[in-house]
Image 1 (cartoon, rainbow, N blue to C red):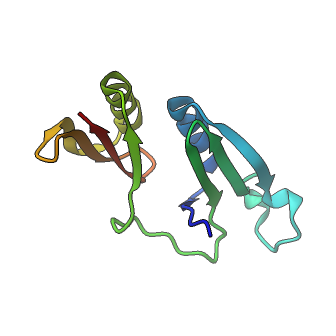
Image 2 (image 1 turned 60 degrees about the vertical axis):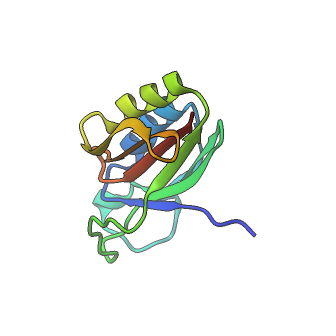
Length: 133
């Protein structure tokens, strides 16, 4: 069994995946637009991503631009969590991924003997970074 995150965007999925690929050192795979599918969506949606995957360097999640009949609301019930074992890399990822977003907890040492940060990125996706000390 495999449980995997599937992120939904409102027209900027390709931009977000490019950003995540650069920050995380992963590759966009299996990229499909609505133009490739026989799905009834407005012409403005044809170039949007109907499905894509980000894979490599320990990263594995899927994403898409939601169709017009899929309501999107910014939520706080799920976070993508990064466990990393290098302080400098943790700091770099925190700085890159949180740029333009909202930091809830700065990356700093926590009581469970780890560096930890929590933030929402500029695309509205919630993240946590944990680096055991």
